[in-house]
Image (cartoon, rainbow, N blue to C red; front, side, top):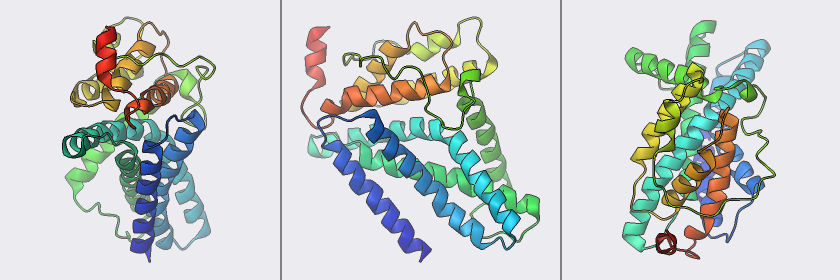
Length: 274
């Protein structure tokens, strides 16, 4: 039953992704719903197994609270990594079909990454409670230790600024600004930002992690390159940058890049404008 539910969930997310691909434009609400549903789907898939192994009500309540905490922490790192994976999916899709595709891979990866985070969190909870573990896939001690380190990094990235201490991951005052024009990338803005003075250690960690993934995005793409360039434009010159702000500029860049997914525009036009 659980397997069939998982297959149904993944199939539904992929279908929703193809629907997003063909839209001429996307609103922030559409992106929020898609990303929230996909990430929560991944968490819930593992939570169902975890709850089945807990008999006491207080333990189940604790597991649900843990699921929320993991979703809150994992949301932005999963968003970034899913976008990175979608860039490689786009490069492959362009090579095979000549057209871009983004969101089937994006939503599927976002669900999978949240499921992975929840499976590790559930394993830790069962160990702490002394409950016989259900099959969550964490038998290798070194793998579990590595995941714990990644979890600490995720917490650091998710709460890089005092403005990030709120119940949802994407609250920011940038909402009312008009969208920027699509732009191609020129520099890695996060490398420069990481060298600035006056940063707290969490912001510096965020910028260094962002600098790494920024350079690894494939270059032979349409949507991914516009997303990079547009975020670069939004990020440069911003002070007191928070994770919530970075989440918002991802949404805005995704919206700006939407015409480059469905073929309305091509990055060659942007090259001509430079």
